[in-house]
Length: 140
Image (cartoon, rainbow, N blue to C red; front, top):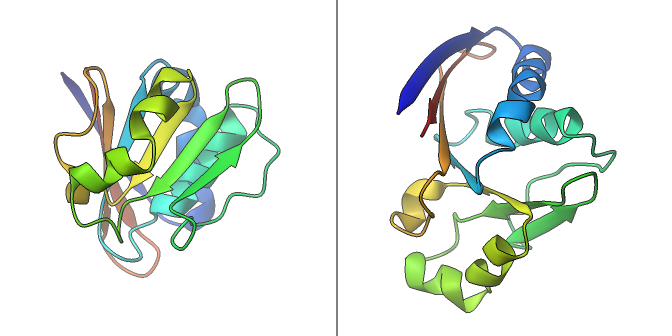
């Protein structure tokens, strides 16, 4: 597993970083995002989607559990915050989403540990201050 560390100093820089990593992250079956409230997870997904050619309006799927964005490769953006465990993820069709070939990107991945397939990329976001984020990308 390779690990890369980055610092971004604004939401725009976080989006730009994610867009620049899109070609690499797209090769994974899923992207597991880790980080607390306000860490920049949705901002990262917004940049990732743009980098993958999606024109969709990216927003947090907190109440919907999953948002789907079109583009050259469909993106399924999950929010695992309200799920009690990995079993609940399977109840919403997680395996079907993975099998569809869409890039499955999940916020609050720590809530569903063990549900990700081999080769999943991990992105850990940490809020350093109001604008600065430390982002660690782990690729298999």
